Structure formats: structure tokens, C-alpha cells
Image 1 (cartoon, rainbow, N blue to C red):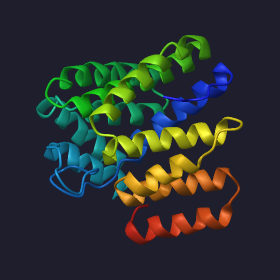
Image 2: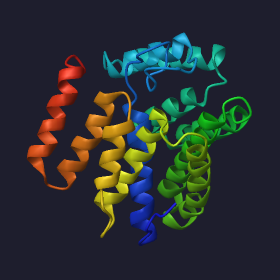
Image 3: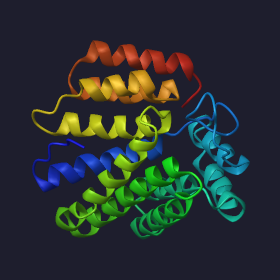
Length: 237
């Protein structure tokens, strides 16, 4: 993976931001509980699906947390549950809770590798992302940097399985965009194309592209993608 890495602080800021952006933006599922794949969906549990809708369709975080706690008890083999709980903890600045669920994301994902190698590797990378975010918040960039090699290792493993997978491209597209707008000389064009071509659901891909164009000060393009996202999810608060 050819990532150009500048100073430790800027790199960790970009990667931590990407991780939180991605796990915080998951939205209403489209088919069989899977918000990422319009065909050949993975089986995501009903409570996890309900949590998606509560957060991102109704904007009801309290109900979403209730659903996620139920999902943890009955559908707890999916690392997505713990990534969502970690993201909520981060937004609420509950760093120890973030750390707990970051580790559960990683360990659950490691167990998933044997049955679903793509998602297992992908969420193992997310778990390392989130643990690195905790390390950055508590100790600064030096320790957090030790997580980067692991993140890229597991993302590359997922890419080797299916480089066109929508869930994978949504995550790595957002990550690449965060790097591109925070790192000098990085080109966001490939990341924008990745989200446009392979990212799903589309309204989430469009939100990422809108943020990228906003940060690049290309406001007309940003508003275009804002309008596209709003057209698909007009009731999202």
C-alpha cells in the first residue's frame, strides 16, 4: 500500500478522523440487514439493523444504544456492533468505554476471519484504528503510530480477497480522503473515484465526497454531493 506518511501527528490525526468518520456515518440498511451490499448481502442481525435506523434515520442515539446493547447480548459475533458502540463512546468523550469497545471490535473481528475473511480482516483494521485513536487521545501520536502498520496490513489482506467490495471501499475511501485533505502533496482524486465507483450505500459515499470537496475549498462540487445525499435521505436530521 503506497501511503505517503508525513509527520506522526498529522498522520494519526488523519487516520483517527477517518476511522471515527466511517463508523459514525453508517446508515439505514438496504437489504437483509446489510447496509453496504445491494447484492450478496452478509447476515447482520435485526437489533444491529434497528440501531442503524435509530441513529441515522431517526437521529435517536438513546434508542440506538439500547438496540446495540441488545445486539451485544444476542448478535455479539459481529464486530460492527462494537465499532458502533466505540464510535458513540468517542462522540460522547467516554474514552475508557471507547477503548473497551475498540478492543472488542478487534478481538471479535479476529475470530470472524475464519468464516468471513474479508469482513474479519476489515474490522480487525477498524479495531486497530480505534485502539490507535484511544492511544492518541491518552498518550499522543508516538504510541498511536505503532497501530498504523497493523491497520494497513489487515486492509491489504481484505483488498486481496475482494478489492471491489463496497464496505471495504467505503472505509478505505473515507480514510484515503482524510489523508488527502490533511497531507501535503496527496491527491484525493483516487479516493473520490473509489467512493463514487464502489462505495455503498451511495448517500454515505456522497457525504464523504462532499466533505472532501468542502475541505478542498471546491464548494460548488461539495454542494452538488450534499444535494445528492439529501435527495436520497431527505429525512435524516
